[in-house]
View 1 (cartoon, rainbow, N blue to C red):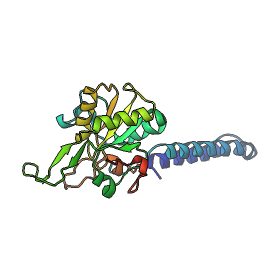
View 2 (view 1 turned 90 degrees about the vertical axis):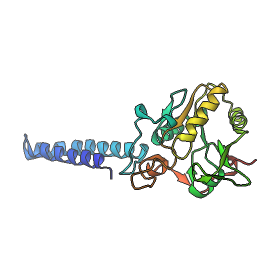
View 3 (view 1 turned 90 degrees about the horizontal axis):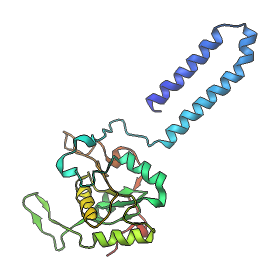
Length: 232
């Protein structure tokens, strides 16, 4: 149980016990007891409901300070979300908010994806045939020339326009920032970048364990539906 919830419940029990031990006769305390018990039950139920409706964050989750974003994570629109905030916006906005995972098809298949995405539309893909990028010491990647068109098609199917909210998520917030700028240049006005992405930032130990969708314990899966897949 979350430590704050546990503390609140403990305080409620202590308050109830102190009230019973305080003023009034034993008979009066007994007569008031059902009311106190009912109030306590309601308080516990409310706390449990709040815990259920609020994304449970992993103990080591470290939110990104959006006022101190590195240049590579900044966008022209300046609209940023943490992974938990993105989940909240999509959960509350439903079909009125597009949530697009812009990672490669390989990342989606082998690393997993949020269950609530509308579609995977890669912003970049590994070159085919493969090339080696000597500067970054990894497989070379190129921009997906169909990216803007695929986003437009998805928005049209959802009856949404260029002024409606779109959330973009990549691995850790760099590609999504670049993708936001591309969509902004195409006329989209309300595009958010998830600053910690799906896997999050790299810790001093060299692992992606600080933040991100996975480390926030938000819903994800290795499986996506055909409607969520990018098939080109």
